[in-house]
Length: 90
Image (cartoon, rainbow, N blue to C red; front, side, top):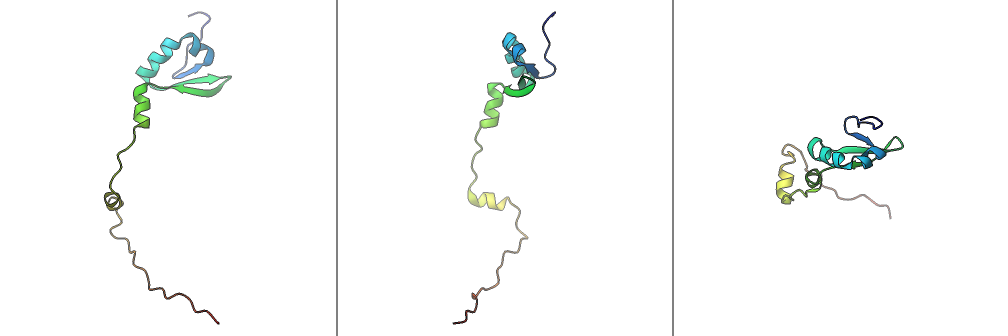
């Protein structure tokens, strides 16, 4: 297209993103996150709702005992020497 710059990869200048917003949205859904620059510096990233849900989906919490068992601390020596405190001169 004469007079219009074509975004390289997934990076768009703000003016191109505004002028071709439908394409920006389509590419965010089909090709992944699209970066928008303002005055040559990255400013925002446009992502699909599916990508956002993947990033913000809470992980299920494991029971504490299961979490500790998965740490692989079986061979770790956690025994402590008996501590009788310290001598204090009175």
